[in-house]
Image (tube, rainbow, N blue to C red; front, side, top):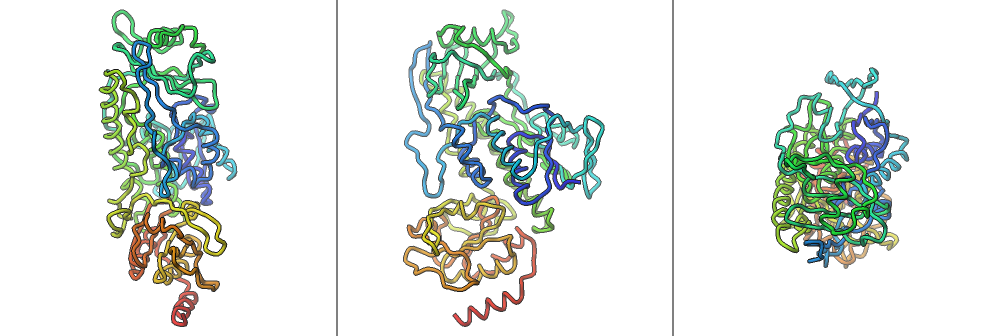
Length: 538
């Protein structure tokens, strides 16, 4: 019996599998497809997902394989009328190292995640379809299409909008499908030299639109059109190469035979749906299995990746017998409202984009807003977000980055490097935080990493084997990012969200936060006694 069986090996399932495997959790991941897909589909991770991928150790490979989002060129009657770059003038900041997402074919991202997963000794089992499941309260038995069965302590359905897992659970998928808003997408090949591959081309006319986005590292172009080709009676025709060529020539005014091939031709209807719960006993849902929404803003894959990042550490803690009561329930508590917000945002952005393209110069840049970067999402309402923080960062928010140096060596580092890994991080600002740091380390052991953060004018750490790791905030950017004024303790969850910002004297608040994240644990009494003695001697 495995600890966690993941059904579906897209970006959501692979992210979850990587996160669990690095925590030492026995994981099995299956997918009904007999082979790995080679289609572009999603256009890439947004800024927040890049932060997740950095923590998982794959962001360098993603950055190398992809490209920055392309500037957009918009045409009317085949003639260029406007250009737009939604990210013009933006740049990384100390608290946010990624100011934009990355353009990369989904198949390539999945390949990178599979390679990472293989490093933990786990491979995707293709051609493996789940057709039944039974939860007996202590484990889940799944039935596979070949008649065999498999057991797991938990099952997570990451198997897309038509999720078999969700249907087997009987979880409603409420919402609506707009039959009028039909769109067609696919991967196509264009004769080299016909179009500039450094531009996202968008043709808008009174009778429709065609948008072509070059896919990095391939000869293909991601095709998207606002409506299907129709027969003389107005009935939509199934996507086909000949139809794509006719639409290509009509909108671009380029020769039809410039479009030399097409794959993954599909019709897309705007669906806005959400599961009414994300957990039934020992079975959970994530990604498109839990929510689908309008394509505007490119948040589908990203919301799934971030579902997995929220769920992974919680599952691991529960499987280890750690975490406070109801820790696993906070997955739905935190992520379901995010999905509801995403449905509203993408529907509104689609409406705004459809209005914009009616006028010359309008285009898909209308769908891009600061919120689509994912950097402003958080869980302030969560039961895990203990009161604390000021007017800026508060408990439940995404934990910001900041440059620092290792106090002992002077080596440059960043808070994100400190956070990276499966642990909880406790930052102590000011000399008054040292006792809370030592108490956290003595009580929670290797589940936490503690760091004393020295300000610009501080002399450095005290010597002694019991001293926590130390960082020097020479530019004051870490203090500024967390709104620190005085002796303060910041607890950062394993998914890099703030669990607590508290006055260092409020050690009870720090204990409560860590108990909720890592369970109530007995401290090493000898270590605590030594800590107290050391404090008195200091």
